[in-house]
Amino acid sequence: MNDSFRNAFRGIFLLLRTERNFQIHFAALAVVIAAGLYFDITRGEWAMVLVMSAVIFGLEGLNSAVEKLCDEVTMERKESIRNIKDVAAGAVLVAALIAVIVGVIVFYPYFKSHF
Image 1: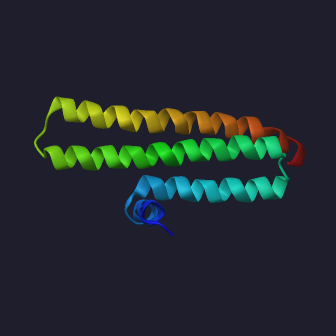
Image 2: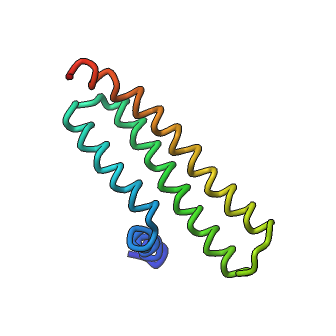
Image 3: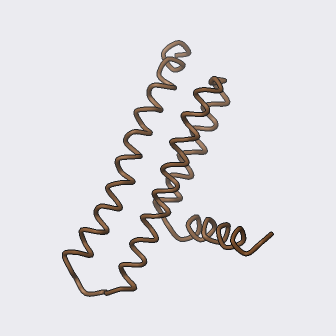
């Protein structure tokens, strides 16, 4: 395995080990995968669920990197740094809210017919 893959996997494990929000998203993905298997969702539904999960994980990773980079630049309270961090966090929140909507679209019919 070349260094770029090794470094990327190291980054993923670092996120899993140190970032609470990444851990929460990972746990949510485990629940969604279990529900998808239980309800036997379609291939298209799997695609939507997995794409949204990838978007969230990617944005959460970038958000964590932005926050750490900002902290390396300065630890003093600056409005510009706060704005940068808030915008990065907001991007994750938007993706998470859309993922919830996708989850409702995918899983609601199964829950409705099953329970």
